[in-house]
Image 1 (cartoon, rainbow, N blue to C red):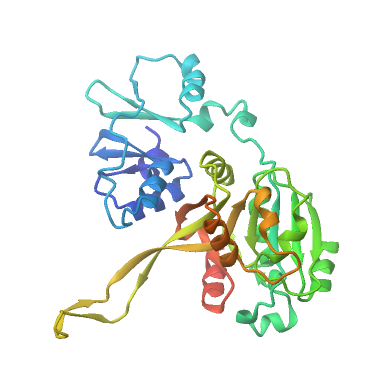
Image 2: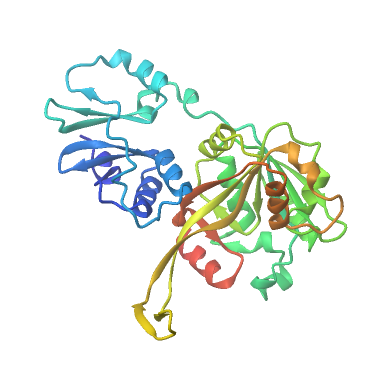
Length: 353
């Protein structure tokens, strides 16, 4: 069996949802194998994890009750290699475990390797376009942003906006819209020298329009769902899976949220009904889903944004919910989200990239 499978995709049923998210992120395969020693217990997909999180399951709970205990498997010596492509296409799965008569894991067959002679069948380019909201002042990054606009703040030799564009370009996305306002001439000057195969379209705000207000002026530009991102976040996610999730769920807006753990560095005091000390919880940890600043939006809802008005994303999401539209959440591991909008996170990002 391949070392990759052994080290990257094997977990136990006692693994927490949070750690399973991390394992999926490291493996990049979209599916994990749940093991008891060398015996296969089942499989766990990214979809299984997302559904569990969205139902309210705590991130520190084990995967014991959410993994698939009857996955598709192949028996050692009981399948033909020429049939593997048909099996993968029919079942729409990323991997197939191969086991012996005692259910011991012998091998793992990966879809991308089976189709390696025809990569285009697996690695389809994304036709969706990207809007990068790059008009803010970046006050939390001063004094850098007294000289440079926030999108051009450097991270290991290239500006943050180039890191963002590169992430999308890896999925074949070539059409980008940048909404600009603060130090817009400097941003345009950078892109006049920036060599890229991508098409960069600028929309210059005559006045600051908030975190989503400028999108209203682009409402006739898009046929497909758009990817909208802040200019100070780098999100490492499978954009094909994200778009598929958004469309399968029939969402009007999908918010990408990071599973984040926060620790209170003190003993937390709780009181009883009479106001006396009940207990002290020493340095408790809490799990939250945190908005990353990346979204998928259906073009039809853009017209709901007020024209030429200062308007923030929170207001837009509240409006969609009031109108009974579908606002979904796509959870990711916290290591897949880098926020460079303030100094402590910027310093962490520099050390990670």
